[in-house]
Length: 67
Image (cartoon, rainbow, N blue to C red; front, side, top):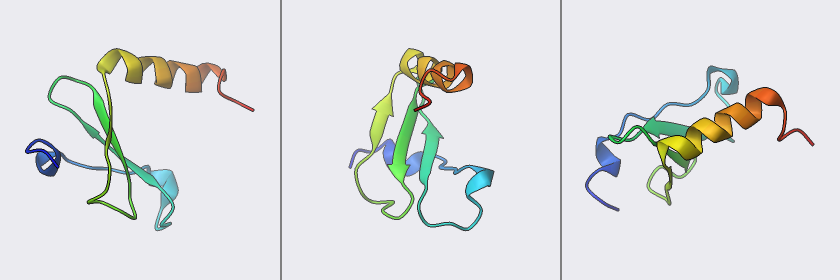
């Protein structure tokens, strides 16, 4: 684990309430996002550049990821 990850402020969706099967996100210093499994806070972290994260959010909003 690197020195940046422990300093991140993690949050999960208010829609997940007290469920254990969630992901948490944190804003990175460069504006990107980090994503981790809430059940394994010391486990792997996925990192996304700001542009990647914004494209992902746009895809969610416009329904292009719906199955």
